[in-house]
Image (cartoon, rainbow, N blue to C red; front, side, top):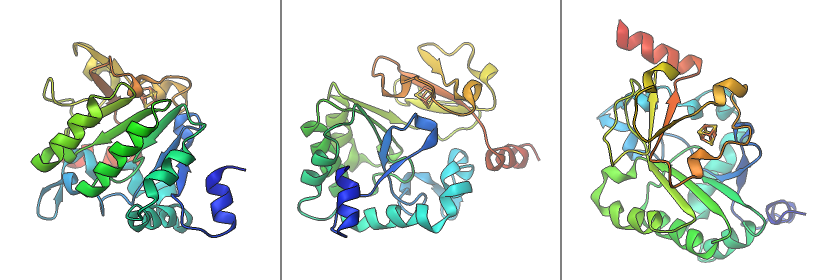
Length: 229
Ligand code: SF4
């Protein structure tokens, strides 16, 4: 029995781990989208374009059983033994995705995630984030980036393919054609495989500077329509 399953069965405090169908069964620790995403705000009441079409605010993510573990995790990480629990939970994982939804909204949380990454060198960690916008997070993010087993990708805010070379590690564009001439970039081809990674692990690959995601989903289509109106 998995540690998380065992803990749930006896109702102990334990990190809630999720699995997204896109990622070939790779597991994730997540928080509630937008509530924990200070980097999503462009100005008061206005989200950056990339977050206006966020997949984690629609579809399955609105169901109570999907929201509940994310809300639970928001306070659970403050426990003294949370890092120990996470290290134990990841004993058999080869790949791990931090924050399928949500972001590292607290510096204390970021420092704990760094500790988990340091104590699980057998796991390849992928962390997409917008917390690089806040100077106090840069040191802990740099420490994560320095680890051989960690791929930290600063997300660009654009949905039209603009990014800052050397800063951003991922960007969204309207279609695959947008990215034909991007140097050092890798195109996400999940759209060719019914939206699934299907063995691709480019997001975890530190040698790839930039991942380019063609926009998808109805909510993102609406964002494009509003931009063109
Ligand atoms: S680039 Fe590869 S690993 Fe990343 S989301 Fe797309 S298919 Fe998955």
